[in-house]
Amino acid sequence: MTRARWWALAAVVVVVVLAVRYLVWLDVANRCVITIRPSLVGYDNRVVKLALETLRHGSPEDYRQVCVHVGTINPNPACGGFGGGCFWHGDGQKGRATIDVSTEHGLIWTTAIVVHETCHARQFHEGRPPGFDLEHECYNEDDRIMRALVQFE
Ligand SMILES: [Zn+2]
Image 1 (cartoon, rainbow, N blue to C red):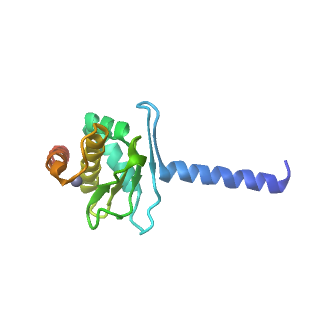
Image 2 (cartoon, rainbow, N blue to C red):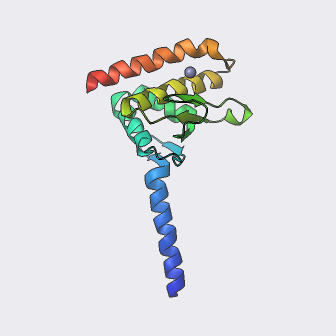
Image 3 (cartoon, helix red, strand yellow):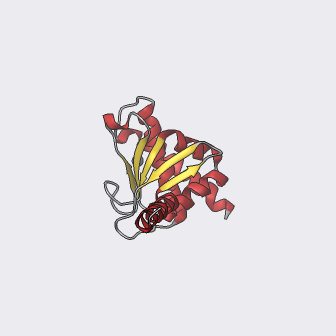
């Protein structure tokens, strides 16, 4: 191998290691793979991984729901606005969904938003019509996980 090739290979390895560290949630034991978009506004997207870790230990059933219904988590506050999250509806979401999750209010809040948006993804996959009339169910879900997690702490 030439020196140039060696450096090219080293660069690829570094990029892959960083991508796995920051941009992919890889849980082989539970066959759960979730892409995490890079945070563009400086919020720490490792909080998303901590939130998934928290769910895995604190509420395995919620964690399983996330793995089934969510394929990508976007930590940038896009359509959810401040402190919130949102779930993108549409034909492109027939598979596992993309959810926006704001991380600016810390771990517990981030975890609750993940559960809330996963609830919307599940509703959508169950074929229910998108809309605010289904908000109630998802608020109950994030309320429940928030209480459960705060109790654990
Ligand atoms: Zn909602």
